[in-house]
Image 1 (spheres, rainbow, N blue to C red):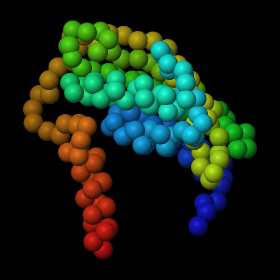
Image 2: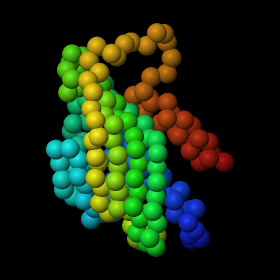
Image 3: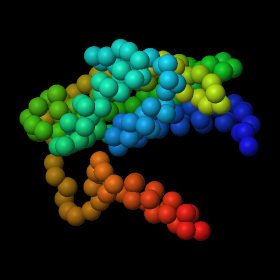
Length: 178
């Protein structure tokens, strides 16, 4: 059954596009990242401009290398959408935290203030990015600021043992058994 479109549902779906992108980047789920874009989308990042396929080819090895000793976390804040029929301007403020080895490398350990300025379009029954500008507003070094956890507890991972993946698998296996 096709979902009925409304201003509220369009805004919610556009916000979910941005959330999917961030989860995909942070969890190394590049199919999820791809789902945030239309196939012919263009992405502009610091050090990169090109198609979504070229963007994924550029960013995936960087993130996989980082994941061996660290990771990323994208924290989203303000999100404003200007709807124009089947097109929208979406602006999302956020913070991108990066950590890894070597511990004394400012390029491996930094935090940036970012804005995702997105041209979103509704095509083929879904909202997705047609063009993105990942605007870096500021960057600061986190060298010497990261410290180990103070005790045992859940840790993020980039494999099937991550708490998110384990929860998803538990719920879907329960549903399959119903």
